[in-house]
Image 1 (cartoon, rainbow, N blue to C red):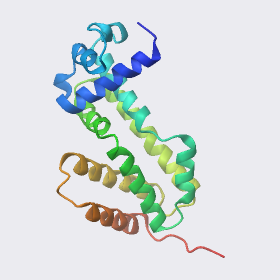
Image 2 (cartoon, one colour; image 1 turned 135 degrees about the horizontal axis):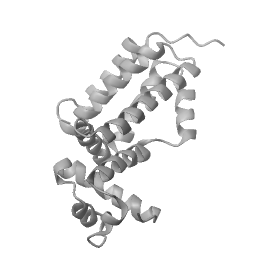
Image 3 (cartoon, rainbow, N blue to C red; image 1 turned 180 degrees about the horizontal axis):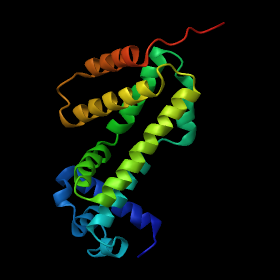
Length: 196
């Protein structure tokens, strides 16, 4: 298999765009080559088969969605009350909304994972690791609600993102913002009052 990292990334980014636009059925090595603007047959030099391409595209989506470590630390450090926690969540939703093809591709990959054990294993491990990391960061920051609040917010925010990307007219921007505010207040619970 070829090892040019820039070419591999371009092919995987092409696969993400194909998945988002055409779904899993449209994902072929030829379609990826065309999307990436490389000679036909290039993807077959980098990916053993379609399953390998799907698994690696899944890993690439997460790579592109994950903020830098210092940004993650800063987000949790700044979440000290319901308002700042809501800002953190809105920024997370905004990051996903700024890469809609990535999240749409991820939805396609989740559906495909019901039929492909290797892909299911990758996504299960990745999602579980992300959840565990969020719980750890939440608790380390001394935020209220504990693990259950993190899990409930994870589920609520994910569906809000799906709604925004697939049926954006269901809620206005103001309604989405208000829903985030209400979710923080109701799920995360009361924040400790600041001491002076």
